[in-house]
Image (tube, rainbow, N blue to C red; front, side, top):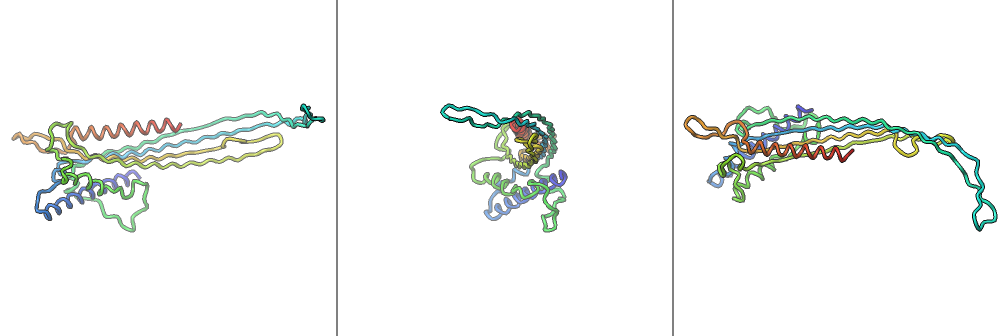
Length: 267
């Protein structure tokens, strides 16, 4: 499942980048002007996929021993005759057995936009005979729409995402996208018996189980690290810049903190 998810996400990012660059070239031809997203070809995409599965189960047996007692006659003020009141003695026994387990699968990849555009692709368009989806992430993540909206804002002059617009690794512009899906499944079974002298599981559930699956996807586009060649010219390398790495790391830290807080609140 993990291999299929990684391949699917990589292919969605690849298709989004190719669609955007083709759209940018076509618009430049139609408008007979410069391209708006040419700078993106010097950027790269960092992808982090985190699959978290929390499983818990508990067993809560309870038994109540009932001892019937002969009804007692009780006198109340204002009444001429006593009233018979039933009496019973209860003795309860109970226990709890629970187990919790967490599995975290995390994969990180990095590809330059140039690699996504030029290297041979193993991706094929989805067809009617494709295998069934394995998770919510194994579907249309709408990355094409997101990347197109985020990058082509450059043409509106409302923002300048070009890596040439600023200097210094910590001042570069970054595009980040996060997708989160949470699937919670739970169930319990509570057989109960109420006899004259014994009652079993009178209130709490007997056996319960819970499974929470959290799928987190973080995609960060940012400029590649600039390297200096022998003639002192700077060109982008195949490594993310410090700003892009910091942005991805900040997203991962925020995700880890959020998952930890959620686990604490669920307990």
